[in-house]
Image (cartoon, rainbow, N blue to C red):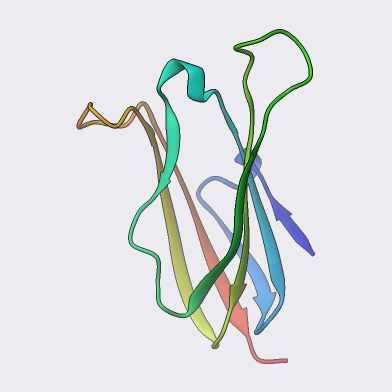
Length: 103
């Protein structure tokens, strides 16, 4: 399983049809900032989404995780925004292009 983290920002990731990909981005929801996925391509399925809080001090940041799978070959742009729900502009953005190949 390919694991994509912040180091993959603005890069391409090659996967096969049906292969599972895990996307992991740092997040601290206690500040109001959360990662939000923009329009997801219908060829991409979100199998799971979760947040893992740290075991340290309360209010510390953790990791937001998505498990994804692609159903057809092609190029799928994936874009996320790190923002507060009440603010129009994101504090950060993350983009990766999934290049999905036939097996």
